[in-house]
Image 1 (cartoon, rainbow, N blue to C red):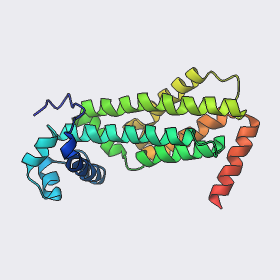
Image 2: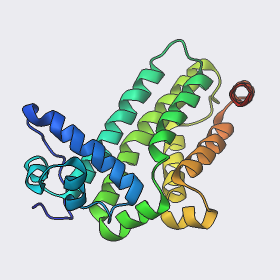
Image 3: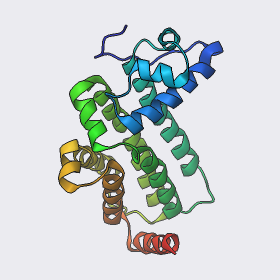
Image 4: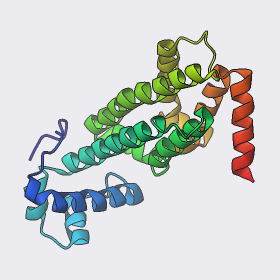
Length: 220
């Protein structure tokens, strides 16, 4: 079994990819529904109707399974966001709304208690989650800012690199379990509030008007 402090990205043989995907799908459901500590190889094997030997044929440990769940989420976010940003039929505000929905959906099932479990019992997984943010946030926010600047709805005086770093550091603080508990927010709630405040500051008057119009249209 691999050490708990060093989960590796699992490479699954091509002919067993379907089985591995099923393991990850069920593990993801159990992780978000019950938490990290309640997700055990015994419980997962029982839910899947297989032996633990079968699980270990695909993944070296529980932490390797959770690491693969995190990696898959990161891959899905990047793929879906790239498709939205490339959609010429969407306005900047439309792209912003779609991107927030995509990222927010992935955070919607993450709870402060789950983040706390990662911090206390699986620091390597907590670091992996942080690394996912470090990879995805600059890509997502940076591309949005540049797209908005080209469309005239993001202020030209904004330094995209600084703005991305500012947002990333702010998000890190907002998603800290202690902060979420103090503000009585979920990670999804903190993300939604933070991203709106951030973009309100960087949008031009035209961009803000478009954002307000978009929000009114969504609420009706």
